[in-house]
Image (cartoon, rainbow, N blue to C red; front, side):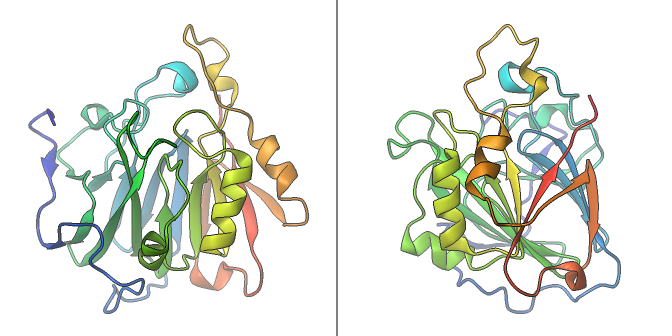
Length: 259
């Protein structure tokens, strides 16, 4: 994997290298913090998580196809997590500074934070077309996070054990050859049973002026299927504490983007 030298692999402590080595609970996770977790959406599957003294960026992208109209996520961060080496979720060379990088399945400890990378297929042909996808799980500011990246395959019992039951789930819903259809996303949500759902990887006006095809559908297709589940629209970013999480049931948070 060829990367710019200022991006370095975060091999501080690899607890296991196979992606199937931890149970669903992160025992001894970082302490709860009174400060909220800030979550900012940069488009597609890219989010910045700030809290607990850490900045974690997931899936920076190049602008092409469905991401053409987004601004490049050139933001300072301590750690970059990528789900694959595809340019719509693995363009780490655009990130400034010298952050650490995780891109392979496994269990890691980075500056006191336990991070699990779970191997899944990036397509419906057992990864034969687009290879593997890495689902990322970690706890930050007292909140359990699960980012599915570009998941397309059904969740296996072994993967479910590792994923556990997160507080917030980031799930692709826009269809295409390397992400869930809205129907598949709803099925995955039933398996994972999170408290908060954040849909990702869906068509927005970012693709309006693209010279390349964008083969994903709008988020409304997914929201129609989730009829009966409360839907909130917090804007481009949200600040959330453990006490803000639903005590019963689940809610969908649809992030917005300022074009």
